[in-house]
Image 1 (cartoon, rainbow, N blue to C red):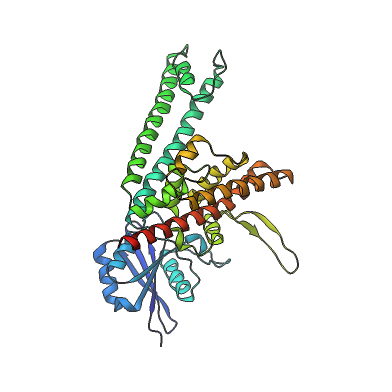
Image 2 (spheres, rainbow, N blue to C red; image 1 turned 120 degrees about the vertical axis):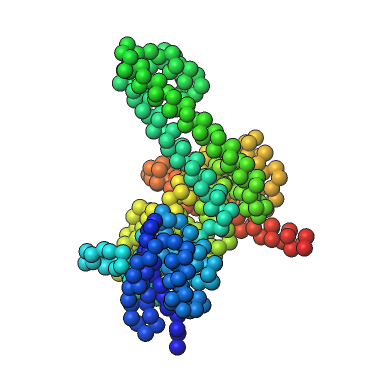
Length: 376
């Protein structure tokens, strides 16, 4: 008889509500404990042998600290996707105790979807690439504030120039306002634009250093992904940080589903109806691959920058990247000629780009493993 006890935890910053689903079928609450290592240790000891316990909790702002604490105690733990936890349509009462019981019950039934838990190296790189992404969003907001301020005052450069270049910023510094209050506002907006630019430069330098210091296997995959058009070091590092080892996906279709870039579907009987992408997946990965997909609007070609990135890579990896250029550009042209708007066509191209990312990642990981085996 199966003696495994399934534990559901509703984790918050200061407290953890726990519930257990017994092998006999009973689901009962275990109370609320402080979110502290010693409290978790006491709970595990109270519930029995670590080998007979399986614990789950929802991914959230508390990160993976509880996961590492439980695995250190020898307890199997899964961090589950909160958006995929089954919810009854008529359930209008939500408490920590009920959430913990629902997790324990669904976990025992096998209805929960675990998420990938990054190791220390992947988590450190992911924190850095997300900090840069946040800085880029702040830069966009800062530029909008300054640009709209100048627009409201009718301030425009006398000659044609591209916005936010060094020439444009030099012109902005020559702008003066009639009122002291507006002058202070202008200087504050300008200072914020310059401050965010310095912040991004600092983060990109730190990201470059982090990639150099990353484990060799991870660095090998990051370098291989840069064979693809539209994917330089920042994009490649983001993909690896968000996905982890690409070999954990058995097929490219699984990676596409992980990104949330697959079409939604509502079909019944003989009727098949597909809609927009689900967006049920990693939003950071989805953003970076759709951003890279815009490069495939152009005809296949290898410029000086791409040729330099491919110079040290294996012919097999470069062959996959060249095949991607032909396939994805043809796909983009086919969709736009059918009347699809550019955004829809690029999204579809981005989804297929993930297939080539998977192929190159698998090739790079296999090459590295063979190299290590030969060296051993």
